[in-house]
Image (tube, rainbow, N blue to C red):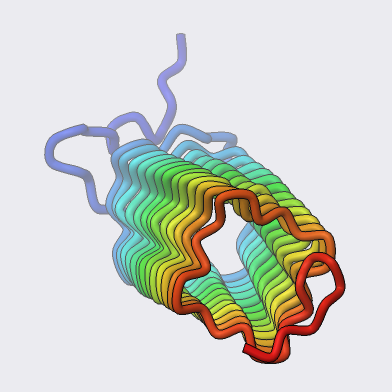
Length: 297
């Protein structure tokens, strides 16, 4: 059997350095298996490498701007500080990859696999992550400003101090996610799953959480002012010291939840479920209570 011209470059230890020209030449010749290679600081902007296997390869500081990388296998690859601005990463495999401080602005990661990936301080502004798998991924201090994550799965993901302003997380799964200090101002989480998540100290101003599932959620000291919690299930959750000023809580379920010290000034709670809810020391000035009565206390 004829041996591929690229086989001599494969070596799990140590990784073999190659040039961008050698990689592209082998790819054009039909080679697709480039696992374990090392290509640092190379320029692969606007190149088409769809279907290539780069598992456990090294790409620090490599430029993939505008590249077409559909279905590429980057599993466990080292990709710190790579540039994937506007790259097509549809169905890409980035499971366990290190993308620390990577530039993924406006990239298309629809249905991508990013389970357990490291995206610390990565720039994912305006990225498309529809239906992507980010379970157990680490996105601490990353920017997902205006990102699209509809129906994405982020179960047990870490998003501490992450910027999700104006992001679309409708029907996303954030079960047991760690989101303390996260900025979700103006984001949409309609029908999202956040049960067991921790959002202590998070900014949820003007956020749409209507019909979200948020049982047993940590919302201590969060800012939910002017947020939409219509039909949201917040039973068994802690909202101690939360700011709910001007929030919409129509038909919100708050049974057995702790709202002690919460600010509910001018909030609307018509038909809300408050069975066994702790409202000790809560500010109810101007609050419309479940029966329609406006409180003056």
